[in-house]
Length: 269
Image (tube, rainbow, N blue to C red; front, side, top):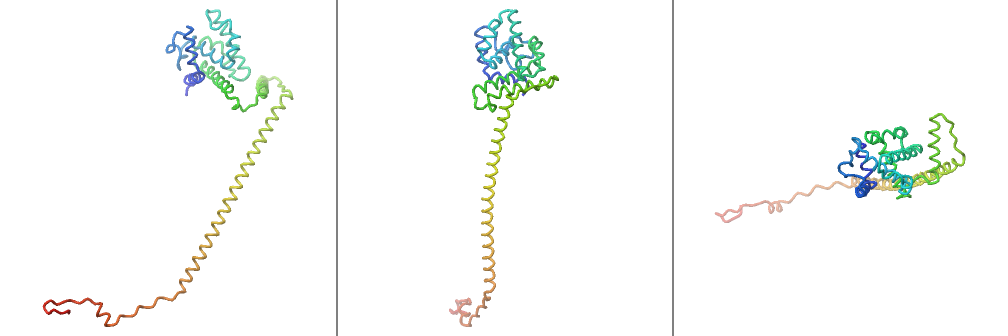
């Protein structure tokens, strides 16, 4: 699946079609077929970019937060408000990039991408943002599926920041209190994995012993049958051979032999 189809599929999963209906009612967009679709960013399309970007940021940060932060520039009514909106959108993207949620190389060129509103790099940025929005919505709807404990989120963010500091040549510092929950969680996961491994080994051993007992029983039965068969063959070999049947007497042979009837003489030949 290419970037265009991937982005459009993610938008549909997030409910972008309902957003377009609301936008058309508010006269923010001129129409669905002309400005929106899988190939909407093959040429400059500022209207589509504004709607898509605002929609994705709303899924990531929440409706209330975005409404409060963009109360003076969304929806943009003139050039000044549009400039403020793009500046605020760039700020949100930079915030996500600083936390390692978006590629830094794309975030650095966000300003130019928001101006051109087209191209492959813009699609890459929006695809990454859409993926993060999908994960955010999924976590909110199904908190039980989140394998990372909530208290470790801050720790993971700190670790990401430390990796960035190492790349830039600065000395990273991770306080000991932040490492403690991470170590405890690692120990807990290791213990769970060890218990699971032991249970699997125990079940495998029990199954092996059961099959071994069945195999021994079958082997013993087979050997008993072979012994009985051998004994029967030996007994059969010891039996005397059958005697020759006695020859029939002349009287019996005469009775058994076929005879012909002579119709002229009226006697049996």
